[in-house]
Image 1 (cartoon, rainbow, N blue to C red):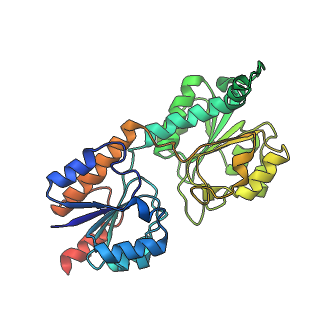
Image 2: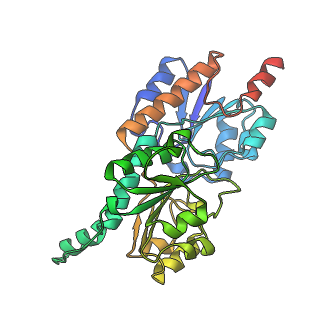
Image 3: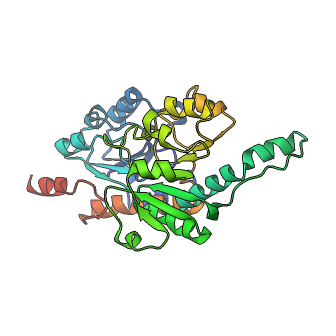
Length: 329
């Protein structure tokens, strides 16, 4: 019987559909104990060596070469999410371990949350709630989303979904990506520009790119200096996309109006200065967390595991060349 080890915090936490599917398929399912969390690389290596799973359903915890090598039977890492920057793909290829993710499952949830935090920043909802609960009656004045220019960095699934929502508000949109979307190029009130141009002219900049060596700290001191003093930065993607020291300085010195931050270099954030700033809307990496998206994600993860074990080729396998190597060996 194949053992599926769940190291992800969120798989099965909201919806039971994924676990049920795996159990009904005859798989042995085991979760990491709460007492073992948070999962450091060292802890994960020990658990992998002890349990020796065939399959791991992981979250944001590190899946390094050492972690993979700790389980000789390991042949599939299933990411409960989309971004796989925590998984050493090169090591997986060399060790003939398949890696899969769940693309598209959280697109609508993150797009909704993007608009929610934009409106919260523009209308100063956080400050208004805090003031009213303290007995105040301040009439906070904000801005209308339709009157502003929104810069969308990254026009993949989530970026495009955000843009569709912004069009409903009537916003002017600037877009930036290394690959242009054919659907967006001809869209009215939308223009593809360079990152520098986007930063200079946007009232809100929202990031929707994956983390890679090219995007790591893509927003630093220089980039923040290009932005308007009245502008806002929204980062729901990965904390490492932004130099958080530079962002903190810009916000403290009022060189930026505010920011919405859902992701951090270290999670949970340890003594992050961003958390205490009044002009930062800080949330605990919840942009993708809706009942609907969690159910979709659980279902895709479980179905991918079941189909892979049946010998089917899943389109969300990120290193399909490993399948060919496994068949030849």
